[in-house]
Length: 136
Image (cartoon, helix red, strand yellow):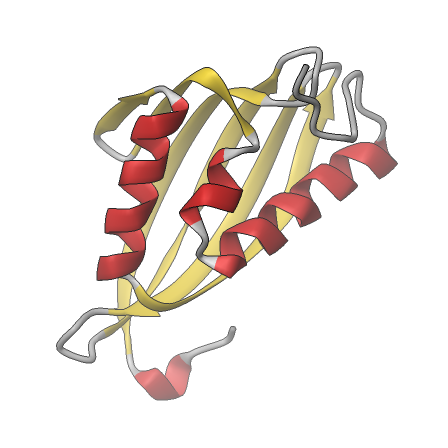
């Protein structure tokens, strides 16, 4: 049986650990590694996309990191309870024309008993920035 520690119910310490683990995994830009944190039948809303299943998540991430070049992410715990965590985040990236962006927003996560994320709802905004305005 797949497990992804720490397991719910979360404490401040374990919720913070889960957020930092997600941040570190996403910063690898490795779709295979990142997708293993999600249930086989995970449900996502990412901006205007509705994504179902780990394999579809992997396909989404491949396309994401082909578009969002030099991606760097920072996540911060916002709130938690039992098997749910809310985070706020920002990440920076540039497109193939060299335009930099800061994307920021909130995510709501729900985990199964094995610590795998079964639901992820992300609201994200993009702001075009100058390379000299980068923070990450």
